[in-house]
Image (tube, rainbow over all chains, first blue to last red; front, side, top):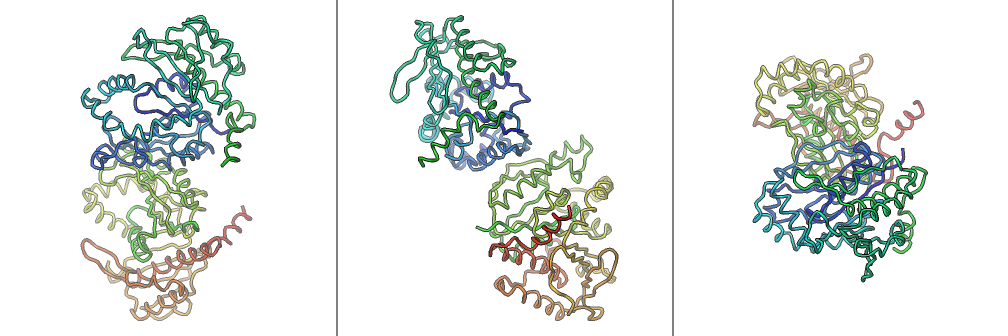
Length: 314
Length: 314
């Protein structure tokens, strides 16, 4: 059996990691994807963190080497016994036996912190929404699903800020794909703009035929150090379909995966759909499926050439 | 760093595993020994086992492959994140980060159940006291330390008996050293006789100069299929010292380990000492120290030749 292909989705708390990964898992099929949240590798429970005045964002608060070890085991098609951290009460539960599957999605705060970890992924995504938007999301989630008051969430965010700045945000530089959802000028939070930095560490689909189709089209914004692609939240639906069509065309061997599940997201009990999110997810899915195809025919995956270069340099 | 040397102590519940290992750890120094109890690798908590009518003695109730994986990691000098099963309330707790040390003692019920597991040890000890004695020990421990009534312990033992017979006791055949503590004719439970089967899978110290010194001496009992050494519980103290002296002489490079901690055991709050237990422990310690010395000078450990033979045969 070829080794699993591993996608990393890294970003601060409430940056939309699960929103991105959910659609990908839906497309690939749950039974095809091993899902690992690195919060499970916290060293201390909530009580102990309070006593030690350490936040879960600090590398010292997590078994960084064991995360890398478990990823290496999965890459060798070995099962792992994953610890389980319970967000509802902040303690640890019975561990979970996880068998390798064709894909693994590893989500978390510090996934790119050590070189060993960074080398474990086939595709590295980093989520970097503006802090203002992230606060809104975190308040919404933590007051509704985790039982905190709005004041508690604000205080927690303030306490975590130094660690976010020191440990979490700097990881953006290691990503192949950086995704920033932004509030659009209209203020409509169901129609977020997306900015994507598509770094040369992976060969991305060519979007140039689709650029510059006006206000409701995709644009390439030249900015230092990284140019980014801007996909407006109100992208013209037909235009969005064309873009996706072109990417699916490159995934012709995987046409059975096509579905309308990309772009779906949930707010409260309501499920919405965004063409912008669909394109963002498809650009990530492209790399997972391509790497899987490469591995299946005996290749090293999408990143192999870059890895060798990296080794020569070091 | 040379790989850790791994001692297995396998036997049914309440066969004296901790009594044997405690003295060895005391001698080697706690900071030199990684201690792993394989009960931590139960798949189900106490409640779930009840629902499923499965006992912890059943291989299906334990992550057998993960135990072997973790032992392999320790042998490669890698740390592990060990699950934690809490005997006091029958649930799982926060996992424990364990770094490899020069020695590892792996205690449990099913340690020799799979070929993969059996190959992981440098020294394999199996404890096989008569069932009557084991019942006494289990009642004493489970009523005093684990909060059960005597009736509950009896019922539990009866429920477990089929699995003991099917899965636990047959493992005796794979041990290098089988230890049976027996009630002496005097009935004095502080002066248990010991019977030891010393199999040729490891080269044991030569005890022949010390055999046949009468009632209070060591004897070799020829029995099918395995002859055994009998060390009486009331062994003559000077004779016991001579035997130990001869073994320590073979461990001349480790004379700094000599201490009077061997042979100590605790009943309730009282600490006793038994020359018989001391000899039994020293015969096990001999193999740990010898294997460690072999590995430290680039060897494979005590079992290497047998292992090769085993491979040729299979």
